Amino acid sequence: MGPALCLVSAACFGAMAIFGKLAYDAGVTPEALLLVRFTLSAVLLGTVLVCRRSERQAVRGRLLVTALGLGAVGYAAQASLYFAALERMDASLLSLILYTFPVMVTVAAALLGRDRLTPPRIVALTAASAGTVLVLLGAGTGRVQADGALLGFGAALTYTVYILVADTVVRRLTPVLLAVLVMTGAAATLGARAAFTGGVSFRLPPSAWLWLACTAVISTVIAMLTFFAGLKRTGPSTAAILSTFEPVVTTALAALTLGESLTPIQLLGGTLVLSCVVVLQITTRTRWRRYVESPPSPVETPPLPQRR
Image (tube, one colour):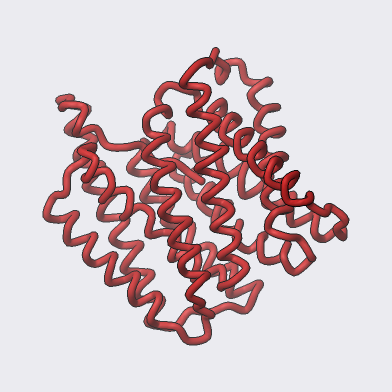
């Protein structure tokens, strides 16, 4: 069940860009999409938390502030950049650009002393960088705009910072509780932004509300809960490797529903990036097993994966 749950989670996350595109076509603004997504997700996850006593725990002080801040600053910023980029470029191409974040996490963790760059990892990082260049330079039928690409990389960079900060609290909070706090923080930030910028219009057709509900329920709540359940059964490295199914789903759904396509060069670049992500996670899993058998110093503890 563990791998199956991880794949379901990846598929749900992979569908988010498609739901976003369809919501835009129905007249939804990025501001409205984000506010509804995080508010509805916070309410639904809060309901799950109330029903599951095992997920509850007392949270206060710095830990509470950090968890809320992850949503109010990190998650809200990452999602804003992501959906702004989605307005400007194809969903399939954006999914490949966003998936450079595992590479960024590996480099950042090494620079911060949380992990080490072994020769296989250096080769994988170099190949991933080459794959990213192929994705960007292989523009054909896929629309590549400079501002959209920059926003996409900004989302990946912001998500990298989010993961590194979340790694300091993820072991101290239950998964559902952490998710509730993150969603609540993000909803508060987006609500405040809407109030200061003149508000958000919710006069939308029924089809728009359908895609908004899909974004919140399928691509946020169900995606997060199945990921946490799969993570518990498979471990962090396996869950991270299986998550590479996400951009595959996005690309396939974009071709089926939106008529998008990637050029052969872009597909080659995307395959190269995803293959390198798998290599990086396999080396992490090897070190994780060594860690379990003989715990090293805190510097060598690999970071746990997080989901957006």
